[in-house]
Length: 128
Image (cartoon, rainbow, N blue to C red; front, side, top):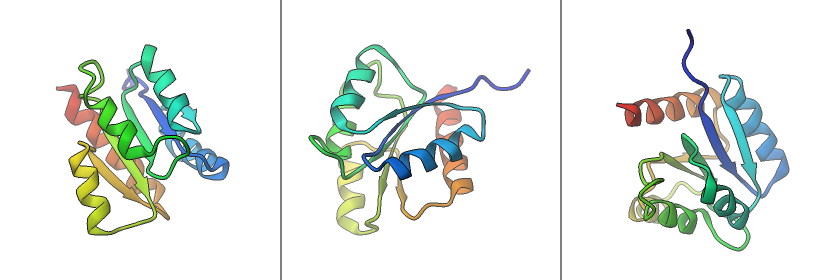
C-alpha cells in the first residue's frame, strides 16, 4: 500500500516551465493539474481541492500573490500548502509571500529533487 497520490495544481504562464514542473512532480506519482493563468486556476479551485499548489508569481490577469491571498481566505482551501515560484530572491518577495500566507517560496532555476521534497513535506505536515 503506497501513499495516496497527491493532486498538485501548478500555475505558470510559460509552457516550457509548466511541462518541466509536470515532469518533476509526476515522477513521484502525483496527479498534476496545470493552469496558465490566475483565472483558470481560480476556476479549477471553485470545485476542486488540490493537496498543494505551486503558483508562479508573475502571471497574466492576476499574480501568484493575489491568487494565494484569495485561496487563504477560503476555509476549504486555507490549509492547502501554497508554494510561490519566482526568479527573484529578495526581501520584498519574501515579505510579500509571508503577507499573503504562502507556505513556501521556491526560486528559479529550481532543483527538482528539492522541490519534490518540499512539496511532500508540506503536504505531510498538513495531513495530521
